[in-house]
Structure formats: structure tokens, C-alpha cells
Image 1 (cartoon, rainbow, N blue to C red):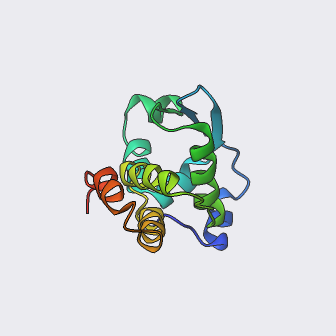
Image 2: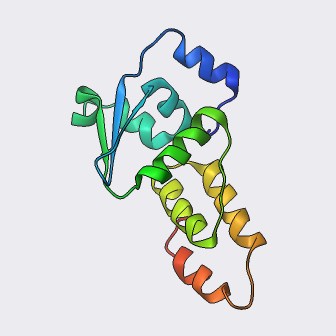
Length: 134
């Protein structure tokens, strides 16, 4: 579900303005479209489809996600691309993708880790990613 085809994004957006504000760890705010987020992730679909405070106010606080990571995640959701540049970032992205139920993004982070595993980092990679749901 995570990455939407361009046609899907366009049909979600139509002429709709951004209706959701995502507030991340450092207080940075990102504007987004609830329809796009809901189509990309069951996490957002359930949150925005409920009568919860976040849905009613249009503000979702994600205090564990850094500004740069949220920008990358939104780029992936809207455009289908992301640059994973380090093992540490891949582990953080894996955890966040797991939390947000972004399965395709989670798979990309896992593949990056698999492709970059060495004798020197295999234990730390395992230790850092052991708590992620399968």
C-alpha cells in the first residue's frame, strides 16, 4: 500500500488542499493530504478514519520521528522514492516504517541492511532490528 502510483496520488488530491498537519519530534510541521496518507498506510487510515482527537483536529503528533526522516517518508509516500544512505539510517527507517505500517518502505530498509551487512556490523544490525515486527 505505502507507495502510491502517480495516478492514485493525483486522484486523491484532486483540488483538495492539505488537511493534515504532521508535527514531528523537533516541532517541525508538515502539511499533507489525509486521503494520501490513509491510502498509503493502515496506521493513518485507522487514525484518520476514527473519531479520535487527531482526526477531528487534523493534527498528528509523531514525537519520535525527526524532521529529516519525516521529509523522506513523505517523499516516499507521494513520489515513491527515498535515499537510504547509511546502516544507522536504515535501522531508524525500519523502526519508523514498522510503527507507521509502511510495509514497502520497511522492505526497502530491510533490503538495504541485507545488502550492506558485513562481519563487523552483523551483530549490531541484528540487535538494532530485532524488535521490529515481522
